[in-house]
Length: 297
Length: 304
Image 1 (cartoon, chains in turn red, orange):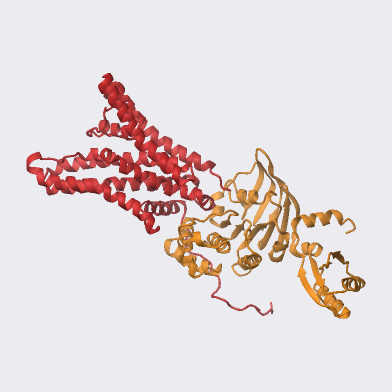
Image 2 (cartoon, chains in turn purple, orange):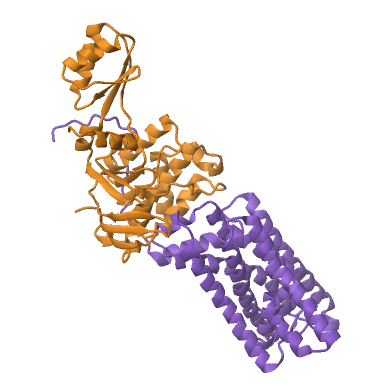
């Protein structure tokens, strides 16, 4: 008890933390915010900002041109040269590149640097991690799709197109964009979660999202116009994510189809809807399965 | 109350048995977990964190069951993995702040505690540079910082001295000792080197092949295991004879003499013996055991 402290004071000493500890839900939200910012390179190096910001610009440019054209030609045409709901399909390559770059940046990074065990040795559950990452990328994609639609909308209003009609079309297109975002983010993340190598992830995502669209569209064209079977061509649209969601919004949201062949009839429409939800569910399940098994060593 | 308790804890992998009915109790303090590579140290830590399920048996941390109360346990535990786990493209500050947030700290508290803890582990200006350019020693400090940033009640350090040079090793060991002595955080630290752990631990648990070899407080442990290594400039035999006549069991190891270090009086005896023979003392250091030596000695030491 009488022992004198023999050490020297080097610093102000260790301070205990007795402030609040936020629970799982808040931690998940923090990871969501961190990942969403990360998808646009915010809070990361300047180099990480270049590509997402460039893509955002490239995505918005055609919308800006459309808005200008609408204003110049509004007396003649009396409408937007391109409907809102077709914008995603027209800019599909940009969307594919964005996902190919940002899905691996979100997941493969943690796998490559083996940071995953640090998350799972903290209060969050594995499904919280998946939820935060999935939600963040889906939101990032949705924002990428929303910006050009808003530009077109502002252009349409400036051209004094009927506001009620434009607003209705925009909202339906935004709903479609949300489905695109969830489906595409899911597929991108499932692929990215399988490899710690960023390059593989990028190549695989481009292949699945963009090349499958090109291949399916070509095949649909051949079958519809050469073979003359419009129904079979319509069914083929289920095989690529882009034509699938396009079919979904054509049927559910009454959007103008960009595919070579829309879903065949009411039965086809229902199948498109079911498959769309099945794909989302499958992505969620596969990601959770993947992270239940992911090595923590 | 023990901080960590395991009962008949078993973990089987398809090819091997990593833990075989292991029962240990860990009291607050610095607890060294010693074993050769593959002895089951990392497996035990992963089970305690709820990262990996046990095949059978029970384990509890703070009296909470690891299979049922994983999230509550993980809120109060810090974990420093053995492997590299740091992204190379962010700075130590950004990384540790993020990890503090992931432990449930609000943004302001996360930043404040990150600055504090990085200073405590000895990272200053370099903390704003990307981690990719750090030395192994600095990386180990960042790994330690992320395990401490949320002020846990117990921190589990898996081979924290791995890959460090002797000076870095000593710094890290001192730091670990401070975590308990100054921060008041119980430490479970693993190593395959018994020598370095017995210097800083209050209690040492030795496991081999997933089974408990011995568990004892360091004082009683070192009584039987600590040795003093000396080397003299000449007349080694005469010095050995003098020490033997003073009641010590002296072993010759090449040019060096190995003595049991029962208490500090041994140092005085060495000093006297060297002075009496009038020779120079070239080396005087505590023997650092590799875990295998201890077991070799144990098997041979029948007369004890």
